[in-house]
Length: 285
Ligand code: 13P
Image (cartoon, rainbow, N blue to C red; front, side):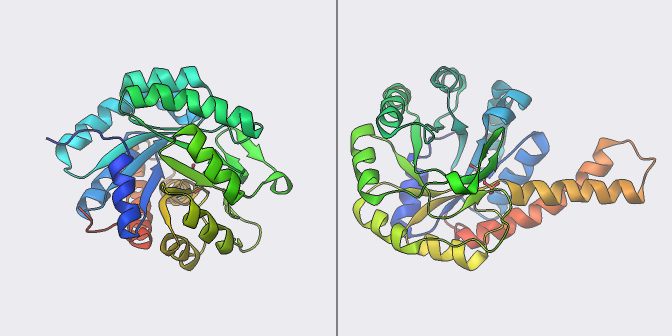
């Protein structure tokens, strides 16, 4: 019987073999089913991620139960992950509820404060066998209720990254190299030199946030250069809701959720398949 894992070995295997594990942001039963079942069909390890807004909306205990059920049916390495959590008490609460992979996002705080908060989460999480991702630098764009103006985005400094990893004991590091959460105004430009430098000196798996709307070649290049986890939210939400909009345009009097959610799941599934291919994670389990 499969069970919910931390993301430790899932990401270390990806780092060793130079592919990335997709972390898909989910919102409800249907989106979790699409992600897990598609990853299972493609024999891909997968991370199921929820922001604070999502976990509040769906209920952390419901999410854990659904993924426990999914894990029994689908024998692939999978982790459920708290994405962009800022409140240590909330993180502790969800670790106690069964989450084994967490992100503490104190990237908006000063360097020393980011270290202090992150270290506190690492100390707690590791006691319970959970792994910790933290972010240094800051992405622009919108995620959940958090908006960062493009001019306030800060790229990750490689030397500070090394110090941050050493002093916090984190398991993976989210870096800012030019991606942003949500859709881009122009074509995103990634700072591959910076990624190369960080990869050379930091020994733990690196995470690319804001991977939606980034051309596949750029994501693939980032993976070749050492990204081991790719976060995808917006690129799933848009086709899911567009399919529902289309359905109601064609069937304005329908009210059966099964009818309009079925095409939404199918549209989302196509993107999940595509992203797994871009990550190179298919057939790894
Ligand atoms: P996108 O919405 O741009 O895919 O960002 C997702 C993300 O980074 C979640 O942490």
